[in-house]
Length: 180
Length: 167
Image 1 (cartoon, rainbow over the protein chains, first blue to last red):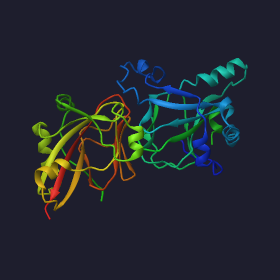
Image 2 (cartoon, one colour; image 1 turned 90 degrees about the horizontal axis):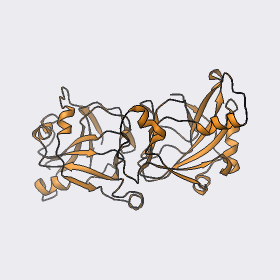
Image 3 (cartoon, each protein chain N blue to C red; image 1 turned 135 degrees about the horizontal axis):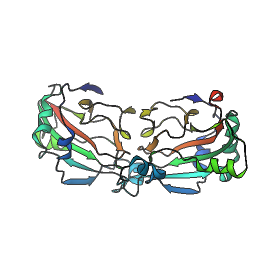
Image 4 (tube, helix red, strand yellow; image 1 turned 180 degrees about the vertical axis):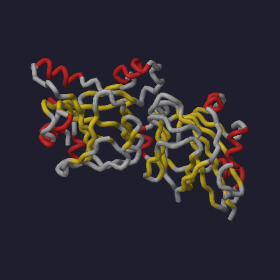
């Protein structure tokens, strides 16, 4: 698992808790993951597989400006995820639909580059907060730590604790040798 | 005081797990205001079996360190999507059966009945524990806050041997 760190000392808990989230998404179908795996959709309780999200256009400037901390990631866009206690995003891999559509619609040349998603932890790990990718876990991350989620890498996140869980996703294109 | 260990030659099979006949499905403890706010019967309910557990569950009590005078057993199935939220154990059944006068010290041995599966999770005293092997155990006390959860697609089975050392 790739591990890096960015300076986010300017981001406070108050800024996180004041964020307005515009979409509340049920992840039970995991973007077709279960279908592709050939297994039945798990019988998750209705209350469990939910995530709050806010996307690029609706994000405040301090969120959008985080893109500049990762100049090697080109044509990027940001989202922030909030997972409430008792909720999780079930195992899945990212379709990266929005970024691929953006590149297509704007006719951007991304030849020789691949899509990558930076998962930036906005808090120290708190009790019950969990990240797992390809059966590997990161159990002691600190705020500002980040990992890179590549397409087709199965991952899941969860909040089994009692405090809200915030992460930022910065998705774009890069050459593998440029990743930091 | 958290201790970790392993039962060698564990030998419990998936078929034995599948044949467990749970009849008690209930919502977990809610011991803090935050837990009351966020956890409902819909995301924090589990299956559990106590004295009626099959003999192989009772026999697990002979395979852990024999540092106790009395014990009770149970087996838990956390279904996909369910969490046992942040809580401490009351050791209610142990006290009911063996400790009327409140003396002695009690602990719980949590025994993982199958190898770790993706999205199965356990944490005690702020220490996450994953990637376990069948037969791994964790011993913890009555003041140790802990959680367990299953975000995967298969049931998460564990046994509990709650023990009492006389004063």
